[in-house]
Length: 205
Image (cartoon, rainbow, N blue to C red; front, side, top):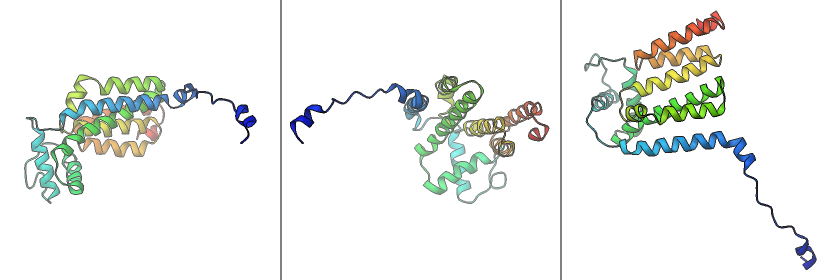
């Protein structure tokens, strides 16, 4: 190139990141919230006293072909054990992996809380709702233990979002799955069914 062409070149202008933030800011904020939650939860990937180890052991028994209620006593709906047993079937038993399941379930709940907030109010409100949920003391504490409540809530919130989005059959299926983990999801399903009556009898049924 000639010196004339080089002198004619204009210096590159700094990129304006504001359009990027406007377009992707919500997802950047969500990623930051989920990353902070995962970082805070890293402390829980170790042994602590609690009844979750009973559920880990029962899940391990299920992964080896035994049946709850027939081969051992279990006082809850069975799907909690089968979810963890599926993890053991694929990856084998690991305490850290077992402890990570309720954490991941809480993050799934946070995602659907964001989606519900975004649909009902707005994107920023959805982000705030997800942050308030995930960083609440009781959620931070409760998501450290595999009691089944975390997984049941994840299915329940996913079902609620699908129901609000008009996908009633898929919503009903996920509510059923959530109830087979914890019966306390059933009132949420009934409540949403009543609310859907005002939109459509067919959807409600």
